[in-house]
Length: 176
Image (cartoon, rainbow, N blue to C red):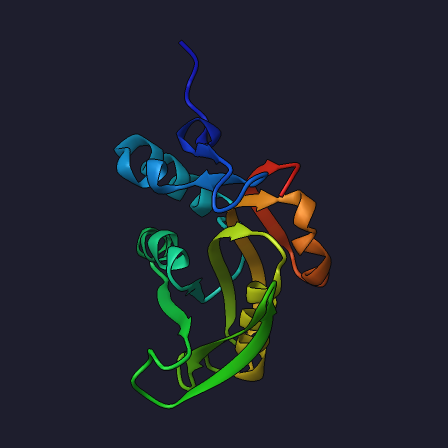
């Protein structure tokens, strides 16, 4: 019997949230202890040879994968949240969505100048959210050591917005 791959734990739901979309559901990774362990281990392996100080995770699925990575690698964890959710002084960045705009923020004192960070999220689609997150880290004086994703939807060309960074996705799907 062959070992399971991360893809084996991802459920595909056709026509969600609208007809023609193949939704890639990671809740099935989270529900399975072996799937969760495999995914976190693979994310950790993807940064073992990277020199960095902090793991940064994007709300909310970046928290799910980023915190166990930070714990396993003995690094601090910094959340990037939706506007209005962090209690201390913040900086924020607005970015475009398919139909409108959104804004994310980070505590002003969470990344110090010169610190190198790995940013984690579950999915790279258009790259807009991650591009905004990178901008926040850099505004605080940090540098991006690597961007890590569980999945990539290649058809949405998110890597194009993130060309200046090292990007790794554990699983890639050709469509959107």
